Length: 178
Image (cartoon, rainbow, N blue to C red; front, side, top):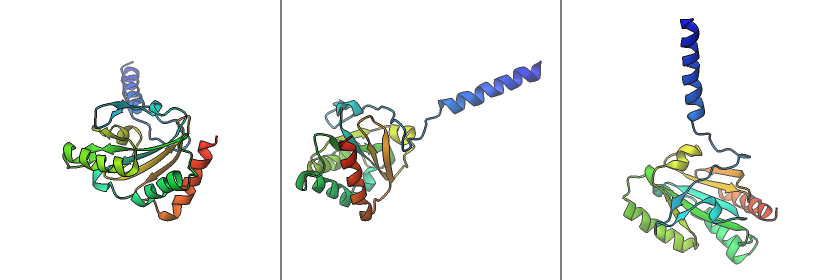
């Protein structure tokens, strides 16, 4: 009887630890919701942009310039070539402040410059929430593409090769038409 009770206790602890863990975001999964503030402490969620395809740049401030060529290509496709319909698309940044040594004031300054350059919203993840809950790498730059239903359609970790830009732009165009 003691062995059965011991085994049941062991199994209950093991299952609790398994189910208590965060699930890594993967292609085809619905992205778990979040809430993050901007520099003015206004809170945003994915529902802040209903009906839009989302391009989320999750960025360690030390890597903030890593995917500028990619973001420039997205900007050109949306603002100049007008092949991405901004009525159905929103690209924005979430700063992973937990992954840097830089003070929050400097991070907000850097983020403010990026927000102006790309005419977008920059949010702040002070606790590394997405890094943990979505399984994103620390000290990196990740780009996540979510469709209008918040299903993950692409995840890019690190530097996006310029050869991928057209493929990602086409994915965004296709998703905005769904």
